Length: 140
Image (cartoon, rainbow, N blue to C red; front, side, top):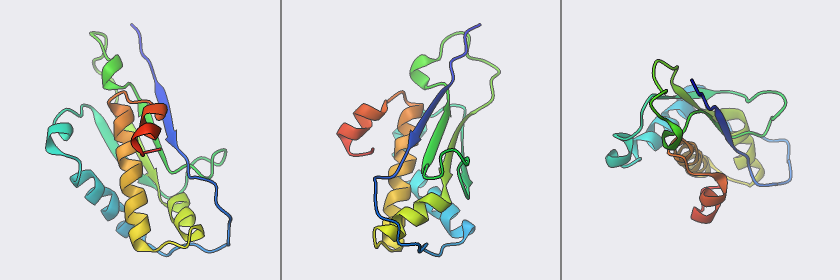
């Protein structure tokens, strides 16, 4: 049996740190992620298979600026062997997203936009789209 596991990440662009953080509760942030998922076209969400989306406050300590993470086997790499496996996992990280938006002088609308970009970016990995192509499409 072959099992491929891929981890794809979305990191912020480099910006200066001013020490401030936008205020947003976990519940508010989770709602933004849910709204971003709702904006994915139905013809694409119907194709998503065995994937779960989570919100975490902070990423692993070794990558503190991580905005999002896809862990799993992209649809393009699944074969007959793919059965009885745990769902792929998409995680969107609240803390780094808020910090990045604050450093950029952003507001709630910037957070909405960054969450949407991160959600689309990680779902694209579920469909087998790599970081280079996402960069070309403006979702890096």
